[in-house]
Length: 305
Image 1 (tube, rainbow, N blue to C red):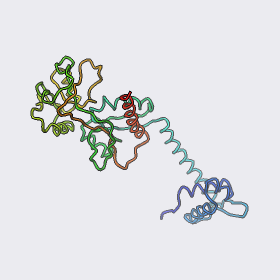
Image 2 (image 1 turned 90 degrees about the horizontal axis):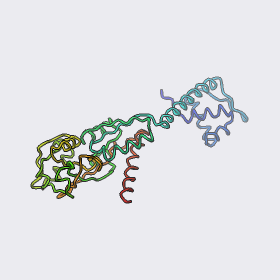
Image 3 (image 1 turned 90 degrees about the vertical axis):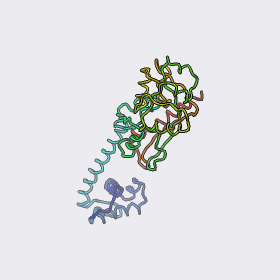
């Protein structure tokens, strides 16, 4: 049999047990006296016992009421301690956050965001699930990751997509390669050199195949790898050129690698945050999620100056 009372009824009972006066007790829990009386009556009816003896001047506990008051006090104290413990965890920023991401986003966004997050929340453990675009989608949808960073997901009904940046594909090459001195290169020109491609199952490959469907002399791969980071390793080894998202490239001070803009056509992808629709994040995960927006704004500010 269900007992029909709630936490607010217990709080009202504790108040009247402490104040021994209905008016003062009602004021302490910010209720009118009639509303307060209804809460006490509801509690007594639900329990089937009389907890209070009422007179015009004073309220006293019955024998059952005294025993119940001790138990209620212990219960509410334990609840307070539990809530304080949870707040303490949030205050010291302990916990774990799991982020699914496509590896090519690490250089441009993720590394800077995690660095800032660690400065604010040094006790939070950040776990990265770096995988292909489809695996990132699945990890977020299944709840294995708190949220993800991806360039696909805006069409998924069960996921929310928050855009971060739109970036273009560039030609990655060594600094000592002839292409490194060019201001830009067409896809047809890129096909004149040894070309390193992303595997057919990659989300980047699908995007490129769709964008280059009308290009007559598109590059034909001599080497193929499954991840952008692997293709950059092959480029660095001098095995050819690769078309990669600009954020996958290391910084301008890299001793070996440089990027050249690709044109005819210019191919772009939109990178953003994905999370399950209608699901709230933990405080630690929400703080990291929000930090991506801060970094986005700071980057825009630097571009304008």
